Image 1: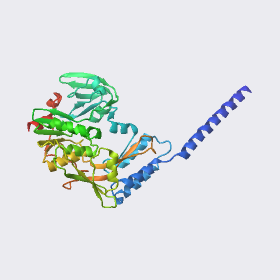
Image 2: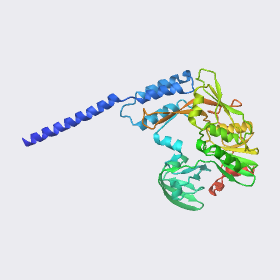
Image 3: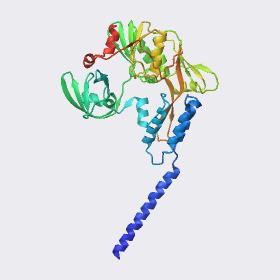
Image 4: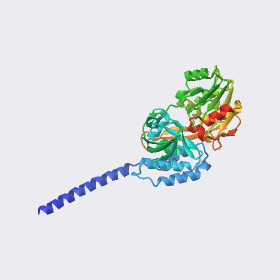
Length: 408
């Protein structure tokens, strides 16, 4: 009797739990709103491409939405949407989770702090960010990464993956344990004097906070006595258009239109100048109500009149490409390194809380065209001379590209 009673209690408890779980999942499924088709339609409405160019893509995007359920992980939805975006083969079209948004807009990183690339088949560390896990572990510029967790390293894995690093430093074989951690990237403008007449200006980013009027005045003073400036735009992924125009205004001494942003979908044929205002919302307000926006440099009291040489590479993109192309067209600047990435569209950011709080999407709504009619998207900025890194110099901590620009 007791055994039968216990069995009945267990069955009743199990049945109650099953009903509760079933009710929970039923309610979850009933309240679920699939964000996938919303994103597909929103992109098709905002992107600069024509309806004809989007027809097949939109069908594919909406078909993929049928695979999403109330139980689909948000991370997987974002990944799949970005894969579908890749089919359009345009830049500045991507969804970012909350953590990535913070990294982009605030310069915060949660990686190793290493930047490197292959030189003569060896993965050489080009930069170790201050206060990063890599610096705290003891890695240095010029180190060769032999292996990472026993595997062949790549420029991407050394930037992002913690673990056991085998390092060749000169003739020493060393081992370091690097942990992943948060640090603030320093992407501010830096001027390095190589002589009384020659300076190298490193511009890692076009984030607005580095291009205030006070910082532009300070830059003018730093460059005042130089006769030649090497402008280093390698690895610069772009940022604020007015920041780029303010930098150009330090080298192009009279206000000129260096290019324009064009919104093919905008009905009215109106045009306006982009104001000298670093606030994104004020720039977007002009773009919202005009088919074309003129990108014009500004009057600069301390304009640099000497020679300007430019370094770019395959990671130089967006606003940095606009700057390089404008210096080529208006200053006849010598450009060396490697062709730029070819990603120069206007990405407008929107919140996508329908996917998850803090998620944002960037949608390209306009393309860039230079003063001479050059389209950068998909083409990149060409170089006058291709440069190659030299292993002995890089191991010694000497940037062989900068060295080449200074010597020739």
